[in-house]
Length: 131
Image (cartoon, rainbow, N blue to C red; front, side, top):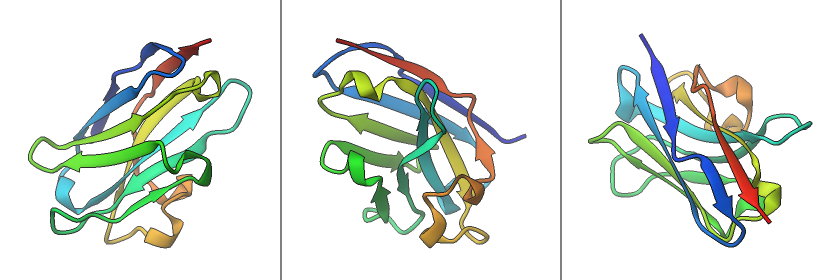
């Protein structure tokens, strides 16, 4: 049974770094595209970042325009985990953060920013940035 579990959420101070992890229990982890989305209060869920499958150490990555420069997505194929780091967080980063996985044989990298690309989702973890 596929399962994704996010961790690392909670209360974070403005200006601090946020580090989230997601443990992915899906067969064929190394062949999955992995992504992070977030949903702020009263807003639709939005793409944050994605990392593709490929031969380490180089992986394809993609970031939402407003997250570039302070966001890093990474994966550890040995531990079946994907990480998201956001530096210098702001109150606007307050949201529920979700990790997601897509089977690379079916998913298009061009559509990696779209929710419909993904096959599996975690329940989400709340992140609140205090001002």
